[in-house]
Image 1 (spheres, rainbow, N blue to C red):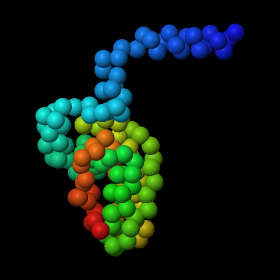
Image 2 (tube, rainbow, N blue to C red; image 1 turned 90 degrees about the horizontal axis):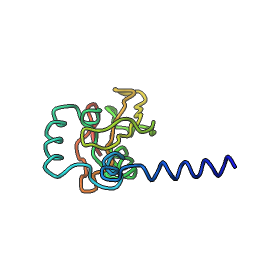
Image 3 (tube, one colour; image 1 turned 120 degrees about the vertical axis):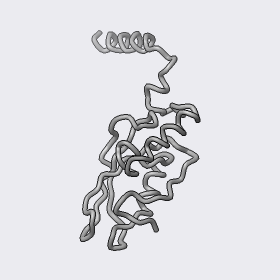
Length: 136
């Protein structure tokens, strides 16, 4: 009986969720969360902050875009860094959920860096490295 009540309560709650802005509330999961004009303005503002920061996350397309970008980074000694995803964190200036990666350069500076990503930009390929790195 308890299991059935939980199912019924869940179903009732889901029917009460407003659907008008659900795509925006989910951080662009189902498509762009900003118009092209809004996005252009947000990019101009974000570009005043360091690339890879919470104020200017690296724009990529999906997790494979994050890994592709990180695979091209080179530490100050020319070696590829090691990296792993630490999780999702907050909303980006572009209205989407951000992911953060821990990037480690052994025997090079910076030794440990956190790089933030917004992975909801299917048409963007970032060619600039974050501060302290070069691109291969």
